Amino acid sequence: MSEAALDPEECPHDLDAEYLYPSDAEVLRMESTDAGIAFVVEVPCPDCDVSLEVTTRTESVEESALSLPLDDAEDVYD
Ligand SMILES: [Zn+2]
Image (cartoon, rainbow, N blue to C red; front, side, top):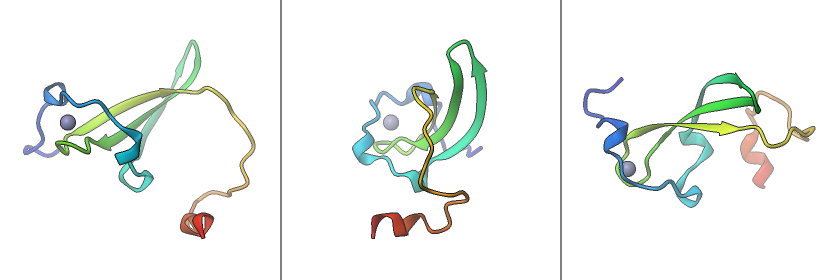
C-alpha cells in the first residue's frame, strides 16, 4: 500500500481498455459468486495512476492454446 496513492473513490475516471495493459494488471484473488467465479484484478488508472480493484465476472470458459505460466507470452504477438 502506497501512502502516495489516493483513495480509489477519488478517481473519477472511466477505465478504457485501450490504455490498459496485461503487464500492468495483477490478479489479486478469485471469488465464488452466484454467477460463477469473479476475478479481482488490480490495475492502475491510466489517467491518475491510482490503484484500482476491478472485479470481473466469468462470461465464458474455453480451452486455450496457451500454456501457463505465460513466460513466452510476447511470442504470441510475433
Ligand atoms: Zn483516475
